[in-house]
Length: 285
Ligand code: HEM
Image 1 (tube, rainbow, N blue to C red):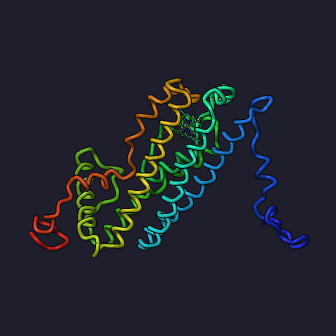
Image 2: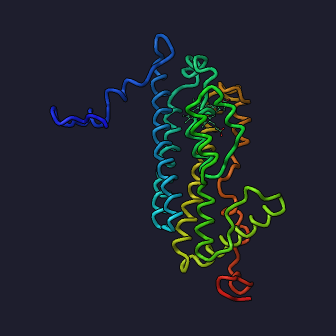
Image 3: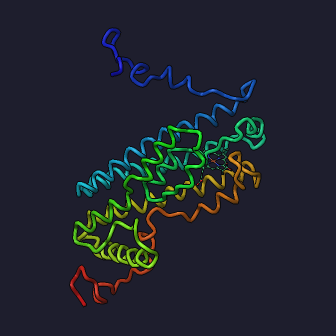
């Protein structure tokens, strides 16, 4: 239990632990380069917002499991608004000249945003799980434990398809034990369920709202990737990353990653004649 104190009374500084907070920015350059504080502040701010995103993603999963689609949509709406801020924040870094960055960049080796534990947690809980990433955290027990929990934990996508199934759609959620052919069929069923939601968005407004917030989360996370790679190219061109990757070349390979591929895929098959052409939801054959 924290001692917020009644004597002296609680203050802004005390509640928010501002003295601790503003003492957490340790520059490695010596003498400290003017722009290194910005570099640290931006990254720490990201990590705080990542924490909040995880809090909301976890809440959205719980709400979906309780069949509370509206509440889940509200949590994801907040995630999306945070992601908009995260995109805008990238450009603050661009006020730093490339030559200023080079003045302290070597000090960062071999640390890299690639090792952002919470970024990976968001990816995992949104559906992009990867065991290989754990190698990056070999010497970090704290990160290992959190990432393993996320690897074994539920995802937004699974919770969403469980919710749809509960509400009468044929949208299987579990695909862990399926072979490729079975997986393809399951993927098709989910895409079809989303087609129903998109077509009948008024009757299925709760599901529609939720699906829209999910795709927005996917879209804005991906937009962050695009803004990040452009900023990186502007800052360091095609230099290798401090984390050891090819740099921009590697980052470009991540741009097409999707949390919820079926939500995107469904758009391809959406058709205004869907109702007449055999939509189970309307009962037409
Ligand atoms: C001058 C600023 C920055 C530069 C030059 C830069 C550069 C890079 C490079 C080259 C990589 C590829 C991995 C590597 O080899 O290091 C990377 C990955 C990454 N960076 Fe940055 N970065 C910058 C700022 C940021 C900021 C502000 C964040 C916010 C958290 C961030 C988060 C990440 C993440 C999460 C990855 C992994 C992406 C993935 O694997 O999908 N970076 N960065």
